[in-house]
Image 1: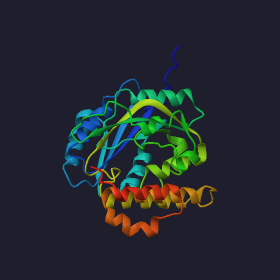
Image 2: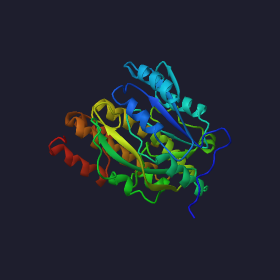
Image 3: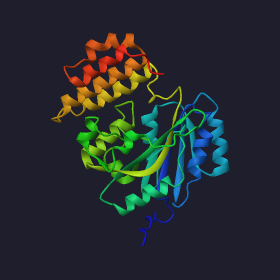
Image 4: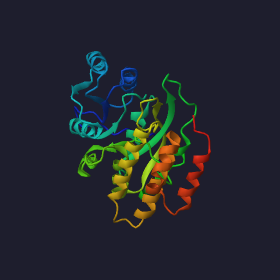
Length: 301
């Protein structure tokens, strides 16, 4: 007999979907509707618009009236502050964050919440993603980086970049995550610090086969690392996060690895800038020097 999905406390949703919206007027309606179309589980959607300068607030106000989710618009405070604000409003046993430019595949909330209810030893699980372009064309296959992370990821594997997790594929126990302190507001990035903190406390964590997110790649993605500014934002925050684990025996090895990845990402954007940063990012490791070969290859399109 199939295991039932855990039931929420009376009057409360089982899952809270937390959406921080910012300047995604082209995509936010499709994103919201994909969440509100989820079936098979009691859930709530909470949206905070973080001071968008486009028409996102007007779109969200209209959708909130039509579809009945909670929506708030206020001045810009940054993604981490917005995630913590959303966290305080969440009422579910479980929660997931979801970007306002992505699409949530059908059944995602029911499948992940069912998994966690059947495996109470875990406070979180991660899943799979498919990449999608700005026009909404979705890849036929899961991103192989996250398939390779099944069935589980340890702190050491993630710290050293051997297995990866995607921040739009998580579902977490709300109370347990709050006990860990929520999102780290000392770092400008929400997902990488969160994953390391979870894994340090509760390693290993499972990675399931559920299709969790159609992740949109477009010009303004921070995570697409398409500009030097985006690369700097991502990797400086990652290195700051790694520095908070100086007490770990793998710290030096991890720091060299993430510096090498920083250099590699820079070469994709500007080989001149990568060369300028080489003295600061170089290390006497094979992993780094293999990446210098990218300086002699044509720029990736």
